[in-house]
Amino acid sequence: MRDETCDIVVIGAGSAGCVLANRLTADGRTRVLLLEAGPRDTNPWIHVPLGYGKLFARTDVNWAYESEPEPALNGRRVFTPRGKGLGGPSSINGLVYIRGQREDFDGWGVPGWGFDDLLPYFIKSEDQSRGANAWHGTGRPLAVSDLPDRHELCDAFIASAEALGVPRNDDFHRAAQEGAGHHQATTRTRRRTPSVRPGTMSLTSSSLRLNAQTRSPSRWNWRRNPSYSGSACTVPSRCTMAAAEGSRWASAGRTGIPTRGATRARPRSPLV
Ligand SMILES: Cc1cc2nc3c(=O)[nH]c(=O)nc-3n(C[C@H](O)[C@H](O)[C@H](O)COP(=O)(O)OP(=O)(O)OC[C@H]3O[C@@H](n4cnc5c(N)ncnc54)[C@H](O)[C@@H]3O)c2cc1C
Image (cartoon, rainbow, N blue to C red):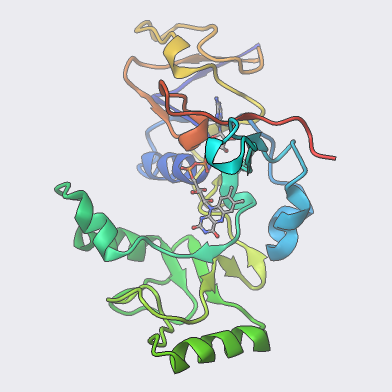
């Protein structure tokens, strides 16, 4: 049995959870316990960009959900992959680097969440292989680069679009996203760079527990007593923790955080 104390518990080591843990521990004083239901990202196919095709059937690194029967699809269930483990879906995703477009953010109408408010954070997170400019940043954890090999069919497709009057767009992250062009990928030297993960963040004042799946948030039982040790989550028994009330953060992904009526996906039986 091992005792740990922490100031903040972050649940889920996907993109959001890793960024949170990274930023929260940046001061070197705040202690974070990062709980992740899945394993470490040791599967070699995680790191090979096209390896995600090999991981769709792997229920150790993929929740492999399927939807409820969809009436609009003649009752079929839809396979819904979600990454499980360090990096979350950013360990098995399609590596396309694409931000939301200005109209989406501005359309929310939420103060502080417009495109101009968020652009500095996109820039701040990025290591753009083309270099820094008004739209891109360098030297930050999320590596973004051009695809090293361009297929002639893609070039032909883009040329066809141009011939039809669709504007050529070589950077979807400038003022306008409209157009046809090659997208960039979240890769560095031909390897996947999962969004941001503990491998790239300061772990000096945080600890990571893998294969530690918490229960539904509605059943979390956090107490004020800082010496509380017990069943806040079904982590292995070696881990007891003291977490101050109000100090937990859930970033278990849109499917991993059940909210009433919002989650329809359910775990699928392993694919064959
Ligand atoms: C197949 C696929 C392809 C994609 N392709 C692209 C792409 O090309 N470009 C792009 O920008 N985006 C893509 N995405 C989407 C992108 O990867 C996700 O939007 C993003 O990773 C979500 O980050 P998140 O932190 O919100 O949640 P997640 O990354 O989902 O993080 C949730 C984490 O919490 C863990 N967790 C869940 N429940 C619990 C629990 N109870 N206790 C403990 N841990 C828990 C999960 O295992 C997971 O690691 C793709 C996604 C998938 C699945």
